[in-house]
Image (tube, rainbow, N blue to C red; front, side, top):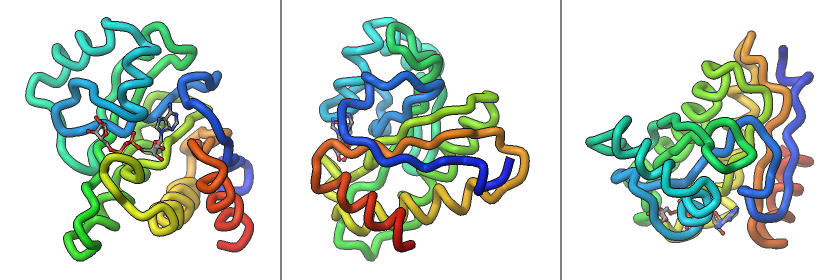
Length: 176
Ligand code: AR6
């Protein structure tokens, strides 16, 4: 499957409502839940998600990495927990680390044999990454990852949690 066969769809709403194979979580290094989308995903999945995170990842994770669990009570079969960078002015490797999150999450999606995946706007909430810069990295890195042959991914949903973020995604998907 090539990039041209895969749709990248912007969508506004709560990521936990989506019927996709994989939901990506914007987690932190502890992999023990938190606020924002992480809180929503843990609430939707139920307490077994935290239990699995503890068992599978006793030492947590690292920034830019992607860590797989089951989806438990979510519609999604899997959750891929990725850890975005804290925004610290932009000179501390934030853009490379954010790109790693998208790249590694899509690689993990392909490794699972999953066909549909939804990603939130990683790092743009509590971690403070500016929305436009983050959206540009998301669009570029997703497109680049989908150029890899044989990934099997049919749909990537870029989830916005505001009409402003949705408009940013729509603009970059049309112009970039
Ligand atoms: N569905 C989709 N997107 C959402 C949802 C939702 N239910 N809730 C929030 N967003 P954030 P971060 C958007 O703060 O910046 C947590 O405590 C939100 O509007 O969830 O990567 C973790 O445990 C924003 O655009 O994640 C970490 O400690 C985007 O999701 C830390 O926050 C990301 O916002 C991670 O910070």
